[in-house]
Length: 409
Image (cartoon, rainbow, N blue to C red):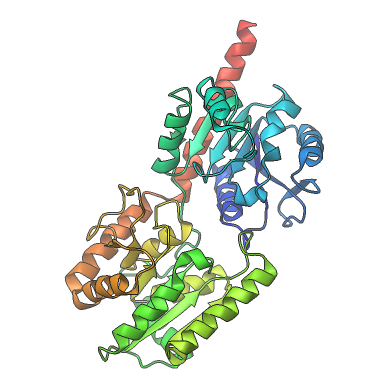
């Protein structure tokens, strides 16, 4: 069964959706699925270039390329940012007709409009009838299955389409998997060696407490507030060091903007007097990141919009057994339980709130152990093998439906 996974950009080092697609594709062959990855513009070596860019004309060109690849199923991975906020991909069903059964995964949903000049009441009427979607165009209305990665997207689809769309929720997995250092007892010695090596590399004493932020470094990730919280915690005579691990450049923050923000963040670190206590690594290979996470004591993800389980970075730190402090999203994620799978911070953009949460976890070994175990159990439920198996099941359901329709004439 050949499945073409179409994403806005196929460079996983610049985009979380591309990283997700790459990992999904790596696990699908175990379930008798032949995955192909398609994108536009500059693509990674493992992907097919469908067109120069996502525009109206580019979507027509992409449609022709898709026909030539002859997939059994077309699976579009939709997020506005991944498609550079051009919704032309939403016209693919019009270009392809019924030539290829369509599945769509909605990664980001509920806040964007492709054609904002269209009056809202018109969108609402079209959506209630299942004819058009203000974000995905024809993708959601014409898909045989709509997949979501999180409850918020599922609920938004239910509301918008008045029950006409029944999404299937399949979670995402970690974007860095543990590199053999995560499980006791076999990995205990390796983890201890990683702790020693990482601290030596950073010029820290062996017993220094290491905090880590991992993921794309972007203004909405709240790292500036974490730096301020670190400065306040060090006034308690705590020997704390923070590593900010992740690249600055992404689709959401292209080259010049990324460099400007990195410079701004480094200036902020210096102004807080934390130059000697904060290490900013930039983008690093997965094995190096895994070693760093295995050597750390606490992970902190202070996103300004809150954190949910649609974050591959969150799942990565949880998979490494790290007690993790996260900011609470406006709509709670049922898998993120304070004191169970994480430590929740009720206020975003608030260094004092981060200080309070970090003191809780740093001062309570029992809480750290409980949260680390609960977080790892959560990450185990988001394993890539199970995710790929669920996708293969959906694909087979779709092909059976198509076969029945052909048989019925």
